[in-house]
Amino acid sequence: MNKLSGVKLPWAKLAHYPPLVRVVVFLLIVVVLWLPFALPLYGLAARSLLPGGDLFPTALLYVVFLLVLPRWERTVRAETQPWAKIGFVGRRELGQGMATGALIGAVSLALLAVVQLALSWAVLDADGARGVSLLQTALIGALAATAVGWSEEVLFRGWLLREMEQGWSPGAALGTTSLIFAIAHFIKPLDAILALLPQLAGLLLLGLVLGWARRIPVGLNKTGLGHPVGLHAGLVWGYYLLEVGNLLQPTGVVPDWVTGLDGNPLAGLLGLTLLSGLGVVVFRWSRSPR
Image (tube, rainbow, N blue to C red; front, side):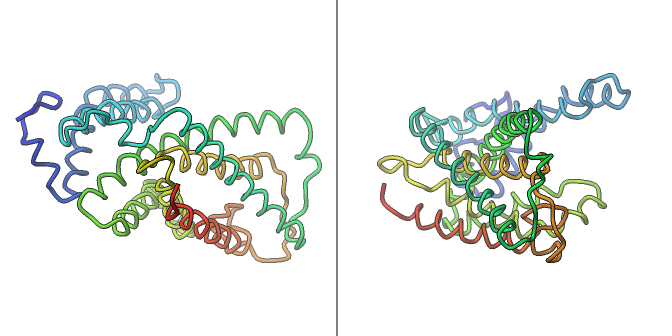
């Protein structure tokens, strides 16, 4: 038996357990290590003594996840290069994948805007499309999109998809991971869940597209996180620029469910169509030789 975090368990046998069992065990380890530090922080946040409120303990949870993840790979699967297996396949491959994915994501959102303008479903807001504020919005959006892309892709396509693939078929692993990815966005109060419900299909489809991007070959028998991180960040940045920058104003020619409820393309027919087309391209790319 090996030790992980000071607790004795038959770690080597865990590699042969069903994927969902391994996922639950891993998450329990993370939560047990995180709670002693998080509870006092939540107490400070409840008394308004912690800047950022719940943000800091949530960030701490992700830090604990990142600390446990490589140890888990070494102990359970005897991996000597755990980060490479998770998707960190080299700076050049990651950089090229991120640049390509980000470009595709940004161009996709630009295409979405062009379609709405061409069909008179929206108009360009001249006031929102000029000045220093737009540049500031673009820079802040790029930083936020990169952070979201890396954090979610390491979690869902780096760790979770890999766990599911160790025991399930590639299709079942990707489908389950995408469903969990979509449901995870609904961990909110009931009124927020009901408001977000129209986005469920879009989030599920997005999870599939990002999963296929994770399987794009970047070398001989290698895949990496560069493409899904870049694609995720590009899509988030494009949405942030259009929505927060107020570049487009709907004309009301078509109902909101066509362009996206509350301005979110994931909750509209146009956005789902775009994601479907993007999914076809990325799926074919993931199946091709390097």
